Length: 108
Image 1 (cartoon, helix red, strand yellow):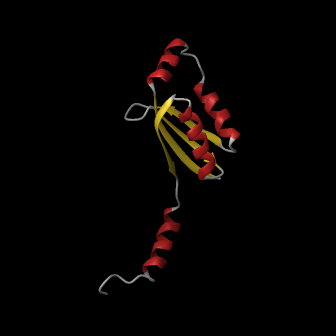
Image 2 (image 1 turned 60 degrees about the horizontal axis):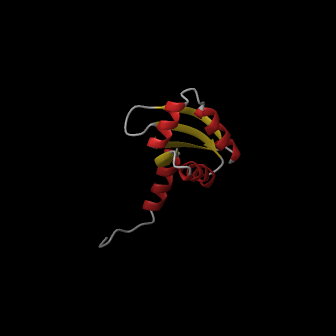
Image 3 (image 1 turned 135 degrees about the vertical axis):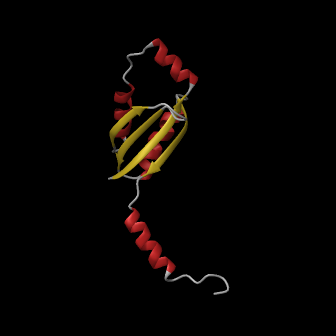
């Protein structure tokens, strides 16, 4: 499993829905969605700032998480959804070192 973060903004239509039913449990709805693509919601937070929510997910792969994102965006309830994938910096830097050892810069 890989760890992903999704950030999104609620649309005016979604906010109107919250106003009409403040007790609606969106975390449960998101859990069901993520589980349907083989993932698990780790955290679900409503935040103050440029985004309205941040969700951390254990997912099988990027495409599964992206499928969940597209499904939610297609409803018109969120906009500007972004997926970030947690990475292993040690592995990345190790691969960069290997690559650099096999690269010659122009004129060098």
